[in-house]
Image 1: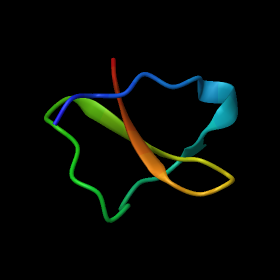
Image 2: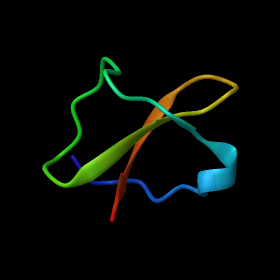
Image 3: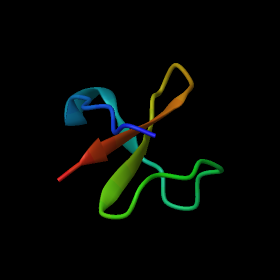
Length: 40
């Protein structure tokens, strides 16, 4: 699964989200819905 780079301003922290992100990737939940992964 590739990490998807997203803008922090568009995202909310999503700790405990029901999505598996690769090691050292960060999970974000978009306000409009949907979860993405970001490396860094």
